Amino acid sequence: MYQEIIDSPIQITPANISDIPALCELLDILFSQEADFKSDQKAQSRGLDRIISNPDIGLIIVARRDNQILGMVNLLYTVSTALGDRVALLEDMVVSFNARSTGIGSRLLEEAIQLARLNGCKRITLLTDRANISAQRFYQRHGFDFSAMIPLRLALDE
Image 1 (tube, rainbow, N blue to C red):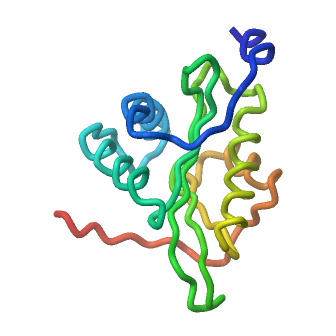
Image 2: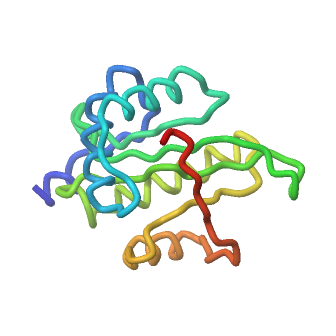
């Protein structure tokens, strides 16, 4: 399988509405690795649809091989008062288990960074689990640094 992924051409494309079931499967993988989240495909589908249907909210790009989605990354847009400009939150990034260590994650992240620049973003912020050292190293290899900021969260739906 690894050799097939290397030998087959990979396309990085915007996600579309018909991709939502495959994106939910990838999010199941991601949320199984994160302590703070659990899979809820109905909620995931609703959120993915909102992003794909409204480019002002953000963007989702996917890595495809032979019409199979192997990975995804999404960026959400907001405005930083500190910078006085548009910034992005890298909300989700995940590559299927069988496509890891093939460079797909790097290609997805590099494309997301380039698209953020083209969309006027001056910064990308992301969160990763404190225990996920391999993800932290991956992002550091791509120029991300640790922030002095500490994330806090308040759930409003309970």
